[in-house]
Image 1: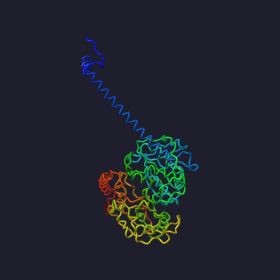
Image 2: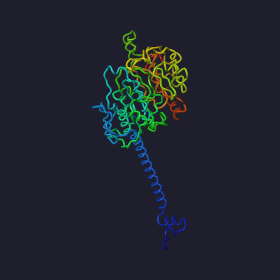
Image 3: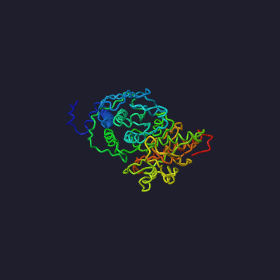
Image 4: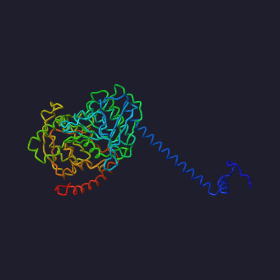
Length: 481
């Protein structure tokens, strides 16, 4: 038998001829094993890359604030209701969440009341609350909203993969740095149900040093009076820069689920549900409570008066201007086109039934600029409007109104679906004369995420089904939408 030459000295192709003589098919098997090995290495690489991305995301949030013990923790404060248990020992402390609860669809898990400082649940304190929702990169709006509202406030925060522990840490740090949140704001964390249920601990971060003179752009808001809060918000805004609403890697943003979660967090009789990047007019809460006291003593206290929702006209303003507090300021800015109706460019019909031309020309309250945060301007019902498609107003309502339909996620038809149901259920829409909401910045089509139109198309189809469902839910109603 001929002696086999070393592999390196053989002629091209001799490998396969020799192998085929010794073991037919062995060369093919070797090639197949090599391909499988390469595929396995690629999968391992992708797994490591995903883990590194999650770690970097946690580090990014944990470094937003510098560690330093239990900042601003109220004595005896902490999570209640057995759903969350939090312990923070500084930058490297352990933050733990309990089991939470699943939403009806089973797709999301809710952790209620993860705040450190309890919100008063006395009946007198919870006649009217504000409910809002946010992703992590929009939380920098919250202190300004709390300062303007000056009452009980509930926020539902959506936290995606790799953000759960960092979200809890961020909430506690914000409470520690910003006194305006303590005892006023209750937080609910909402996550996809596939995330870990407990034992969530953020990676320790060394913290990014913030120089004392760092500016904190407010986008028209007055700066927070507490330097620590200003520095914290400046760091959070740096992270949020360049982010687009709804363009999240965590999956669809469940805005109606978040609205319902915030509404349920505080057992108030009345609630105003708004977006976190809006501000109410100064004194709206005490002014409405005065109006409500008059209504309960007057003829409108008769049965059926609870089927009224009180529309708060919404407007939007350029980023560069100081946000108005009272209607007299708003009227001046409206005249020079620095303020315009909400969604004026994107969907004029969605707010047109508010009748802004009529509302803006109603006289401003004489006591508005002299009223205090405890009294507020005099509020009255200016006029009532019948709901027409596609009106999606913001309003104060009883907390017993139907919940938002949680099938609607991302962009399109999420708020209008509840307004439509209220109309079919027999509610009246009463527009307030001296109260308003102001959105920070004009809403522009160019600033939305690329998938907006596709999401709107899908939710339009769902809205058609929703309207059919209402016919079954309210078979005796003469109204439709």
